[in-house]
Length: 187
Length: 187
DNA sequence: TAGGTCATGTAATAGGTTACATGATTGC
DNA sequence: GCAATCATGTAACCTATTACATGACCTA
Image 1 (cartoon, protein in one colour):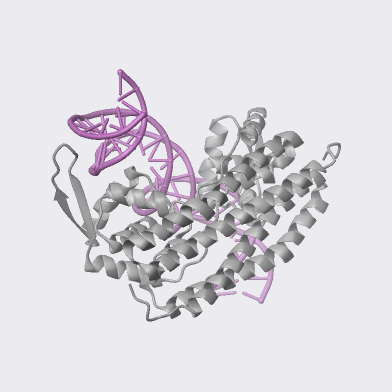
Image 2: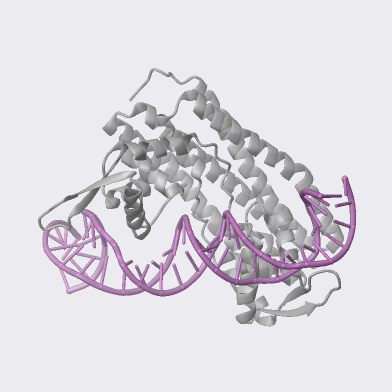
């Protein structure tokens, strides 16, 4: 499971709670992986049973207790084993493209509405990646001093940007083509 | 579930068996959605129970019997309802980017091997999409006469091509950057 | 006083993969 | 003789989502 290895990766930087791990997902890798707390907590438990993690409880007053996980030597070995393992591209699952594929059933205007909605969302994301998200990466590097790591955080963000640009380009071209599509042409 | 609607989409073109549906997945939408037969068969059953499909058994000699499904009026309504429903981009899940994100743990050469492997696979795919796959789409349009539908099949393929190009560009840039990366720079 | 943050989960359900099973025909 | 094609599935398992539950503190 990739989730386990993403968790190992972050715990390899520093010990953390499940709640904090979720925050790291939400602000640094959410554009290519994410998980809900209800999946993270049981997964951390299973990883502990497998010996990849150890856990101590920090008792707090007026706040829930914190379960702080840290990576074990076995966990580090598993992380490195997984990182070295050759990986194929993930099988894509894009429901929106199913809609377009069968788009012949819809009217021009319905399709255009779908595409414009999609285009707007991808433009928003692109702007975020180039602005706020890039800035968060920079701040993380500064705060942790992890220069070499920061280089790789930036690389994944570059892919996020290329991905959004590809979608934007495609949406714009698709909109143009559909606008000039002959409505009388029925099958 | 998107699988159900992809099945509805194909059955809306023509009645078919589960086995034939799988073949359609494998040769026309596999680059953005796919499913195994062991998922397709029970799903068709559930769709029949929901009233979206009807089924007749074709008895064959010397071959297994065929269960031919065809879409019902309720099925067509469900397909159109789903096609019209506004859709957000699918949450991406890319395990390879997790490996790159935590790539600081690996040596330059290990990373380069991963990236070169990835690059080669994406280049193969791009070539296929621009050649054989494009040709299959053309033939399907010719064989069925579904010109308007063929336009949308082509659109999704365009996105597939942009997607592969984005990966290829990114892999090439990442390889260059890593090659010139200072190995002594430790964190 | 209503909603957000901190912090933990469980239970039910949905979606997807892997492994196993059958059995005749056709092509290499 | 061995693998592929045609054609159907079941069972076990893994992964992920949704809904529910608790409870105190802080801010608008």
